[in-house]
Image 1 (cartoon, one colour):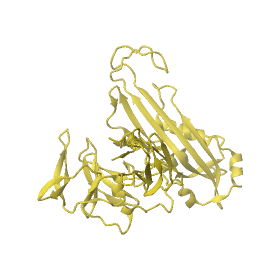
Image 2 (cartoon, rainbow, N blue to C red; image 1 turned 30 degrees about the vertical axis):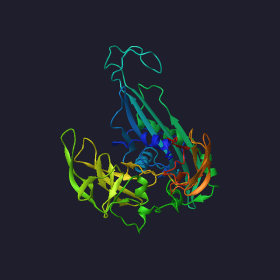
Image 3 (cartoon, one colour; image 1 turned 120 degrees about the vertical axis):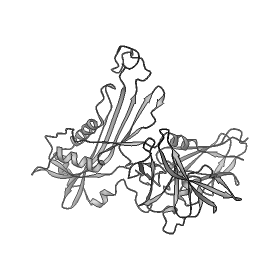
Length: 435
């Protein structure tokens, strides 16, 4: 029997661990000056596709990544933080024209290479000191902070909002031992982007078609008809006792039935001695309790539960997402709310799960015939034959449905692989070689 593997998806999943905490950045102490401007920022909109914060900080040592990377966001959020900053630094004057700032992208990233275990006598390169003296504790940490912004500006008139133009800029560190702060980088990016607008641009914008505020507010958001279409969100959805072997099983409301599922109280104990109450689901088979198999979560018929970082937590519906609370390691008595994004399948600490906009873009799927597989076999995509896959051959498939997952099957009776397509990167699927 041949089995389909999707190594690319596994690698992507392994490369994106959930963040442990959020650090909020404030621009209140940063400067921004545009002496030649003829406008002020009347409103800020978030038009990003991914709204789960603005970046992440990680620390590396010779032993690898730190255990608890930080997610970064503006305080209290992107729209409020930018609005407060821009209104304070660019106050409206009697002759200024009101414009709307639409943020298409605002990302920061920080990677710190700790000096733990590193000698302090280093070769001179990239601003590295040639001799800092000593062997442990004297070498400075290398900090790489990068930032990128892309913004649109719209002129506001009684007719609506007229597009002016898009500007973008990227900042990379020149000295990894004296990198500017994220706050300074963001302020520098905003000044660079806004300085690219001129009075002539504002005048020309009035000849552009006017758009409504409601239309601009939809940019970066899921659009009809894709909203609220998953089976688990259906008003007619009914939960039955059972367990979900995967996220897709939950989203499709297709648990493995387990009518004898039971929940027993339990306690989770941390290394520091803290403990929190919890519960453990078990199956009652032939009068004996058995643990659930490894699974994504379960349902007791009344509520659905997710298994997340060693905890089972009940899921609560919130709009087109679900939320749940689990304590973070080291803060056992302080459960933290997470959001489960039903499009990407990831959990995040951000209230807005940052789901990407379902688009009409086409995902490219490449299926490879493994060596030793012999003569060609039919390949089925969601039950429809799409070609014959032989040894060392490649079948290129297209998938343009952002709501439903593609299902691949090699041969008329082979196992079926269902996965979530990535509309940004090619997907490579390889059947396992026959045994």
